[in-house]
Image (tube, rainbow, N blue to C red; front, side, top):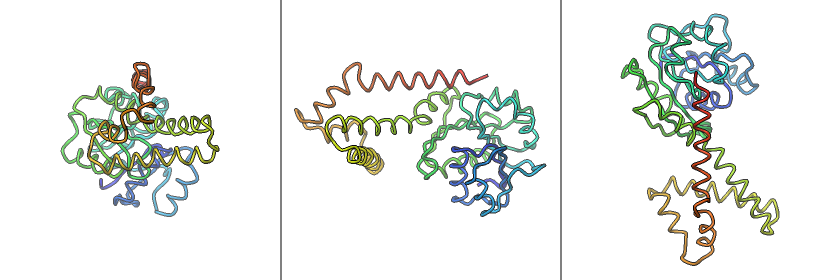
Length: 267
């Protein structure tokens, strides 16, 4: 964990990551939160753990984490730039904002890590893709890795351009999974199940399958084949989902749309 940290923007994602950092040993007395409209949960957390919240003139930290909305960067940049010291590492989770964008708006920023986490970070089961620019030192990268790993799996990227694809796959991915639960429950209702039963079974099926995937080293395709008997009910359903215009095609279209939107948020 870094010696000190400033978190700018403690919304759902920033707050989720903060919970993981504190659990992993981040010193709350050396942690400052900047958020113009903090949630009641964040206010209570700061009071309970002794984190500084919206202090008038905060000192630059060893790490500055940017957790604000991408659209707010332009207006917030002057205040954020004052939070960057000579050796401060900037860690940004702003979708679409490149290292060039950040350094253009934050003149003091040199060492920058772009990271794209996802919401399961709130329970330590997140998936984060990260890229470090050439000015990031080995020690700074180690600090960034410790922060991000406190929230789950971390994959370091050699090419910054891959961040938009990470955003589209794992950053937005939990919403795709939640939609699958909704769709499966609705299909169960259409097949004649009571709504409460359909929702309970759909939720347990998806969460249980995720737990099995995590516990079993086999590829997802192998696990799929293991539960598919030739000519059986699962095979009949997969014949629909795996047809050329089925789930695979829809997922590629969805990920492509999310990636384009991430690119549009740049600049």
